[in-house]
Length: 137
Image 1 (cartoon, rainbow, N blue to C red):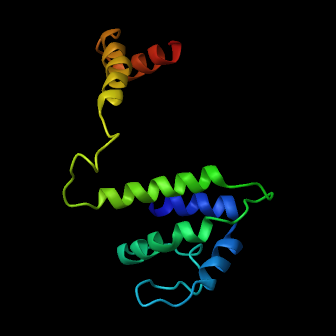
Image 2 (cartoon, rainbow, N blue to C red; image 1 turned 90 degrees about the horizontal axis):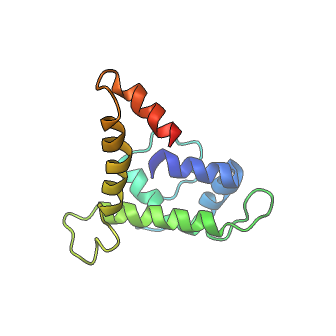
């Protein structure tokens, strides 16, 4: 999440809207309130990162994007990234937490894109040859 998710949100909604939403959060004994907003944060500690994750979806859930367009795709992306972050923090996983997680698709891509491309080279300066082969395909 870190920089990328927050930067996407900044670009989509604008600094002012995000910071105004953060300033409106009610004080809570479990969540840190960022009274100056989150758009100007350069170095986010892990504690601050965790705190931002607790309220970020609530901040963006009903804001209109710049240009007054509806934000469902961005909200779904934020939700998906936050879910991934929470799952990644589990100390161990069960079958239920790893549903839909498979290396089957990436392994097929690896075979098609790397192994086959490497076989077509003369094994000298293979990166350039593999890239050219992939561009032709």
